[in-house]
Length: 248
Image: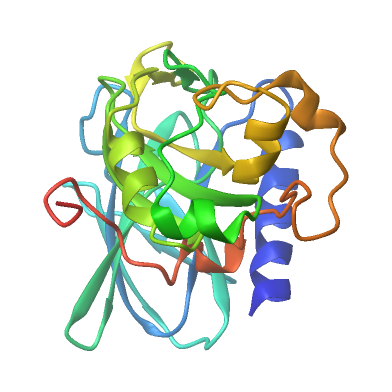
């Protein structure tokens, strides 16, 4: 599934980039069979009737209220998109579970962090005793106001550090992303936290709260060397969303 999902992402990005002027295609990639329901609205949030929604190789037309429905039978990923200055959302019903889907194509202006990006969070006793360089990767759902409303943990740093990373991520603030009309829009942001090997920081007299510039020069191999791992993007669709309530 990993390779198929990535191929679908590349296809839809290429289609968007091939538009004559600025990109007009909006869409997402979903995985697995089920009933897909969603809506298409314009940049002001008003329903768009008669919009042609591409669902894999098929095309469905939205009703007057902007809604559409399609049955997905493919066990792998499906590309869903619409052409125009509009927004599209969807919800995939798989048995008793409903998975909300939002656009994954990038906004005109990406969200920008107001918070520092070089922060080292607190260590647990287990993390300091292990003396390993580790990293957390998170997918943040950033609202039109610039706050983090929910997140997915894409890479667990271990040693009991995940709850610390999640709490810190919910405290982040962003300048919200902007759509093609330069209006604030909801978007997703990949975010990472690093915990250098505990004794590496102490022995080199580095700050315990700020990632030192020297970290960039550390080798990526070995137990006490830098964790240069990347997020597991196959978890974008499979990991559950965590909210501030479930993180408590």
